[in-house]
Image (cartoon, rainbow, N blue to C red):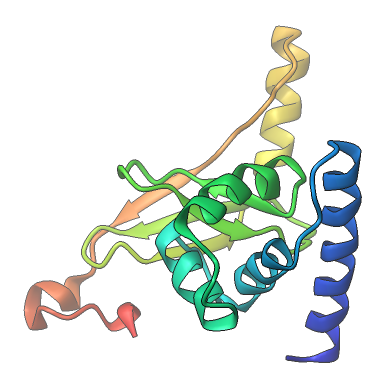
Length: 159
């Protein structure tokens, strides 16, 4: 783990710890390992992906602990939900970025890519100002086909 990632993880843990204390929740080693596991995962992940990685760090982490921790991580702003229109929810660590991110989902392998979409911030502000509404969330998703998958039955992006 790089020094930069280690510093982000330390700050995220401190923020999450303060959040839990503000809610009168126990600060446990298992929750810390779940947060570590989320930071270890490279991209978007499901609850099951998080469980698998957390159990590599601490085999006592249960599925129930994962499912109770995910809403806390979301509410605290450590992770975000990524809804791609599937039954399973996907999550991603909120890594600080200057730009709004849009998701491009490969319809062949379901891999999720994030691309900068700085115009979305402008769009949200414009909607808010023109309609006198408070924008709560916004998202941009593009679903794309992988031509190589059709040819070779393997998506090159799935590696």
